[in-house]
Amino acid sequence: MIKGFRGTSLVDYPGKVASVIYTYGCNFRCPYCYNIELVLPEYYSELPDYKEEELLNLLADRKGFIQGVVISGGEPTLWGKQLYYLTEKIKYQLNLPVKLDTNGSNPEIMKKLLEENLIDFVALDFKTSPSKYPILGADFNKILTTLEYLKAYPEKTEIRITLYPPLVEEKDFEEMLPYLENFTYLALQKYLPEKNLSGKGVTPYSEEDYEKFHLIALKALPRIKLIKRF
Image (cartoon, rainbow, N blue to C red; front, side, top):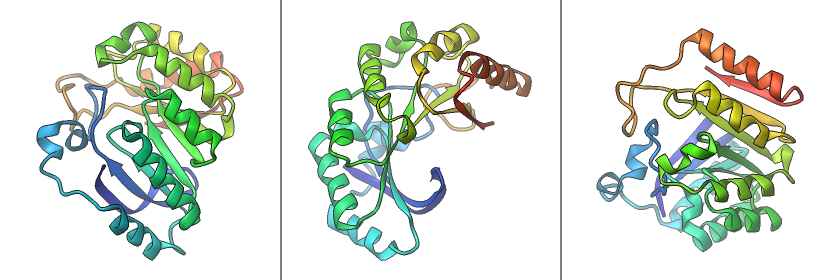
């Protein structure tokens, strides 16, 4: 399940110093993905596995310094019960809050984790407009169900949109925003062309373009707390 560990991060859990756990495998193929070592089998099959006991010991050793744990990937929710038991041990054995990074494709797992209070914060990557989700090999209906579950936890949720030009044109962005009413946090992220799955040759938006997206979001969602990562 686990192929990576970062002992200290100042940016992955809002407001907290955190350790980051990386699961492997993903059911999406986003062209701009930079964690290719965790997505493609030919790469992650070469990485060593972390045993759960080893990982929990690493986290226990860092208690008093870290303030939380992030579970990222890959797509962590692919691991179902294993993810459930891992979050339970981190939350209740180590008494550390847990943030989950997800693409939103497994709504029933998300519902269970939220209802049983096993995660304290969720970052959901909202990829593109509904009509373009099949490009990623994804079913938008599942994303929509996850969004509906998360609306009950607005203070525990950050929606992230990476402004990758082929997937998020202005018309796509405008189609996406109505789904985000009643959420509290929206992060707009810059597409980084240096390392990615298959998006090489795609030119990022200009700074003026990023500011335009920012203004569109503020106009459509005036009460949302907008985070700019560009």
